[in-house]
Image (cartoon, rainbow over the protein chains, first blue to last red):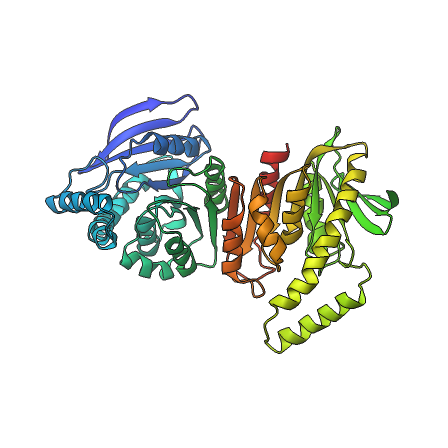
Length: 240
Length: 240
């Protein structure tokens, strides 16, 4: 892990850019002494890790005492896309504009992205936990499909806050039954791109007995500000 | 309003029993100086106001700075029941034991209970707000059907936390569209007596743009402890 930049924010949080092989990442660490619990924040594959709202949320969590890390996994954010990914994204735009069904296109795009992202996140986790000042336990926040995958394969993750706002591939809908860690699922009730019933079915499917659904009216980007506080309290119950 | 008993609890909360005409009630007030915001906590009609879990929740809210009041409204809790109410409750028990449909029996029982309870709660609210140490604003917590009614007819109520765990009469399902105050709806995902879809439909129907659904697995009485904290934070956003 090579740090390529470092700056100190107003609230004592340190923000560092890093690379780990081909993986670009950002790490926020709190001013507090002693090993901090770690939250991996994985945005939906369509947004880069530098997206302003995502960065604001990460800084807020860091100010509350968490180490927070994010990466652009293969094919996500600013990472180069394969020809197949470019074709799938173009086909997705075309089908959406034409009002055609998009499930199979999403499946062909997001399924492989999750498969490729999970090992990169685990490699990143190895590197993060070897840094001074970062301890366990580890939480996960964000992209639901990847969170399901990681919660199933990565025993160091002890709690997950998932945003039900993107396509969840068939494999992860199946794997949801195996998720055994505490979960908070956040749903925008009127999310234009995410059928409500599918999110409710996903919540129902999770195998864990400690799962909570929070739903609010409005579209994909309309999550009210207090849900960020609720998310931090959820991690506070399980990581601190 | 006549106070019939008073005692001081460990956390500085004062607990007073009162009567207001035929209405028996309990009022908890915090140690803090200055007028406290008020929460009306109306349990489902089947439980008396002295139920241990309800009392524990009221004391907790009072310890956090709220005045909290509850009553047994007509036909509810320890209040005498009319012959028609006794017949409806007996018929309900028989039908449930026989596995027969119970919606129409619930409608005939709960519909009139809500109609009779609402004016008693408003009378109580008048009396409470005339006491020193109790200011506005006013929140409502508990029995969903009554909360819908009060939120529609009582302009002094500015926020409502509703427990989706009882039968909501047709009139209140209709009135839900007129509710304009911020709402928190609490749903037990596997509530044996409360079909999940009906609660989701109710959440969808509420007219307010500020509504949040919290759902957790488990049966009617399995609400996790942290939802009480979340409820107090909801009131903190709207009453303080």
